[in-house]
Length: 160
Picture 1 (cartoon, rainbow, N blue to C red):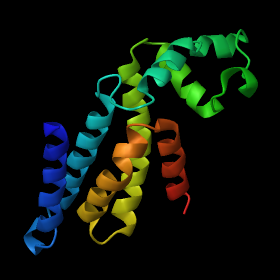
Picture 2 (picture 1 turned 90 degrees about the vertical axis):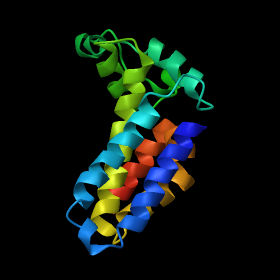
Picture 3 (picture 1 turned 180 degrees about the vertical axis):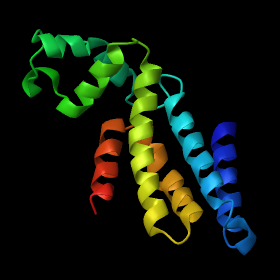
Picture 4 (picture 1 turned 45 degrees about the vertical axis):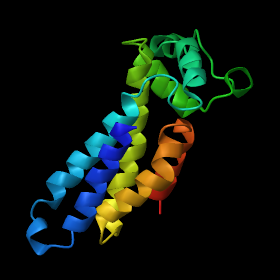
């Protein structure tokens, strides 16, 4: 539980600090550091922290490598895989280099949190408050449990 409280405390602290004009020069640096912390928090979690982690790991180990796509050994069929083609493509690229699920979680977290935080930074006056709300409302559910829907939501937010 301590890491969750640390991240929440970090976000709450900077949510208060962004009200001070002296903080404006440092805001981009700390915002980037905060996004990196969130990506690492989601990416380096232990298998089983999220409700669907073990299913994602099992499916990840079944994904053929990217070279199988290129040579035609693997042909995508939703009825067989029950996964989106983009997600399988990301997984297959990772499988080309490693079978560790940590790289999958890091890649997915980088995409979903990166896109979402980019939009929060562009459109919100109070970016750390936006990240705090993101952390308590959607991050713990979507980016830890439903990683495919986290990417879809981040892409949807980016398209606005």
